[in-house]
Image (tube, rainbow, N blue to C red):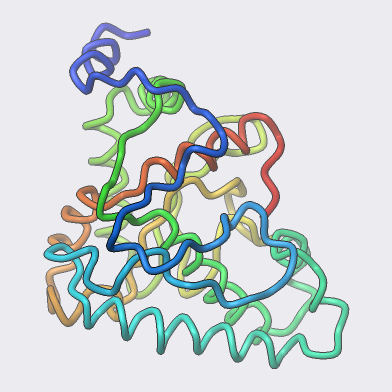
Length: 247
């Protein structure tokens, strides 16, 4: 490991292991827990894993309410209507995305919107956490330090033109990469330039930040790191690393 990477590990005091089944933080502000996006076997609209105001001051309660109950729920309803009576009703999302070019634009757009938002809510938490030692070591290997990783992720999210998402993914060769997607596309879709398991994502559609930040997307992205649910990211990393992840 590079000396700078070693200092990053020591400086953060990270000693936790990536242990499955311990990733969800709980506190009295939590409304209900959503199922892990890695274990979805049927299409349901999951409860928000925290109260509307739990992410304040970084994301305000009204934004969370509208984003979740209007935008996310709207994607789910239209996706459900599009697949009603077809084999897709019982098909896991990762299998739909693996052959999504064969389906309608409605399935792609609204299926992506439904699924991407589940990943987004699940990787946010008022209690944040931190990367486990194995994940942090991997981040240091590919990005030199946690500081540099955040800088590169921020740049990808800030410079994406228009609406879309920035992602940290693990590729089939077990490499970590930062990628972006437009609209409601994601790295699981068959046409993605770089495919991989989503470990972390940020929504940079304006509806995710405009009430609080107006046109200051950069401020929203910088504050995102205060509410990243690293416990969920650790769990996704472990599943991707061991080949047990299913979307």
